[in-house]
Length: 301
Image (cartoon, rainbow, N blue to C red; front, side, top):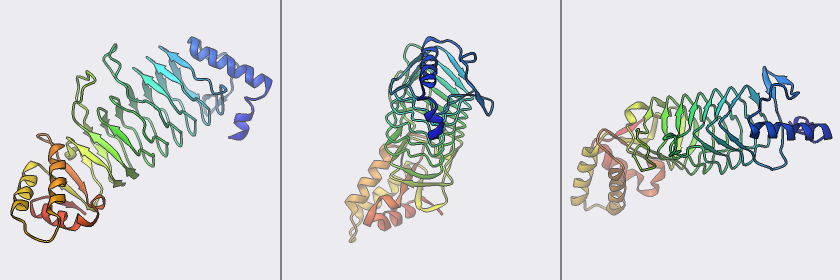
């Protein structure tokens, strides 16, 4: 990758990179810019614009290899990006609005600090990601308020501190460590008219830690066969657990257990279910497991 990046530092390479940036911003085609091809894609691997971002508006980008490129602070508005490769690219501080990406890959890309899911009020829509691969991408603390992800792969992605709070996830895959992530099915504003489901999402190979499911119908989610996970099928389970706690006089921390029960209850809506990860509960895990299983919760392993 160093050799691919170095070719843009020569006088000719620097001039070509400037011309590419001008064409991206100006909406001009890249096909006749004197670029080579790799794997059938226009070859922009390793390109850098000297830390300068680019504002790309209302255009289509198709069939480009951006592997290892420095695309810091790019902005896409009203764009369609198809069949592009951003593997190991530096995509820090991206902003996307009213943009569709399809059949693209971000394997090992760095997307830290990016906003991938803003709601665009003028067009009454968010961004759409269709058959996009985010495997092993750095996505910690990205913002994704109202995006739609369909047939996307997040295997191995670092999603710590990400809240999919109004994002739709349809036939997506999460595998490996899934830590400190919030999946939220509630309608929370943003003028977004349609729901944000988790539908046919595959978490079977995920290792959950600090992960919160709020108002999600987990019947459409393939969960891990993990004995530390308890599925709460509905509020009736929590009602029975709470009733037991009112008469409990044992030596365990009933107040902490009641806090957990109340937290799950606050995230349930009719037709949704909850998930408790015993690994997140510390010393009180054993008592809470006994309480909830006795009230009708299901251990997933």
